[in-house]
Every structure is written in structure tokens, then in C-alpha cells.
Image (cartoon, rainbow, N blue to C red; front, side, top):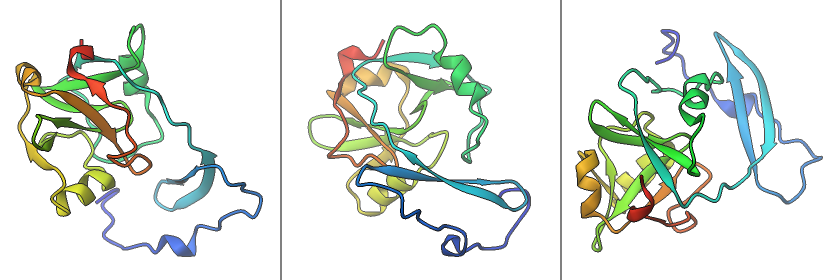
Length: 167
């Protein structure tokens, strides 16, 4: 629930796909406050992520997507890796733009403490392709590799991040 609203909105009433779009991959962004203000179609740029830096931040809240990403921008300043892996209250959460999953050699798991319960994460959990568990920093050594997932990146499409490349 955002802004105390309990109404349901059918986005088909608000989203018009422009005829001008080509065959590239686009993301649809819905900007809203009390009402839907506008929709945008932006080219989706797949990031090549092979290294992550652990960043501790116990105050971050991101249970809904917000236009204002200053919190993430501040955390991303002065890093020497492709992205960050956020630790909140001792638990692994997400990277700056996606949920994360880890592979232990047998199965894929995702942190039970995400900042944002993403749609792809929920889909993979429902399909039982991943499961969720508590993951602390020291638990990373139990995994072989990691992958990033979000609405635009499926598990099979995600670049692999070797655990040794999480600093």
C-alpha cells in the first residue's frame, strides 16, 4: 500500500505503447504520486556486472520503487566495482538495481531480507526455481556464484558473478 491507497489500478488504462519504438528492449516506467502523472518508455541498458562491493547501510528503506534514488547514488559513490551488494542489519539484501540469487552447487537461493520484493524474484519463488533463506556476510563463502534478477533480467540471462569477486 502506497500513500494509504487501497484502490487497484489497471495499468492498461494508462499505458500506451508508442508506435515509434523500434525492436530494442525498453522498460516502461510509471511515474505517480497520488495519481499517475506520466508513463515513459526508456531503452533498457543491460549492465555487465562481474564485481560487487559489500556496503553496510542499516537505515536504507526501499520497499517500493521510488524515482528518487539518491540513497543508492550516495552508496555507489567512489566504488571500484561494477555495483554494490547492500548489507542491512547484518543481512545480505540486494544490489542497487536488482535482487540477487546465490548458487551453492545444487540450488539457487535468494536473501529472505530483500530491500524490494521484486516481481521476478516473486515469480521464481512461486515457481520454486529459487528459495529464500537468511544470508549474512560470512555465509557468502558457502556459495559458488551469484546472479542478478529483476523484471528485465531472467535468471538464465544474468551475468555470473563469482563469489571471489564480492569484496
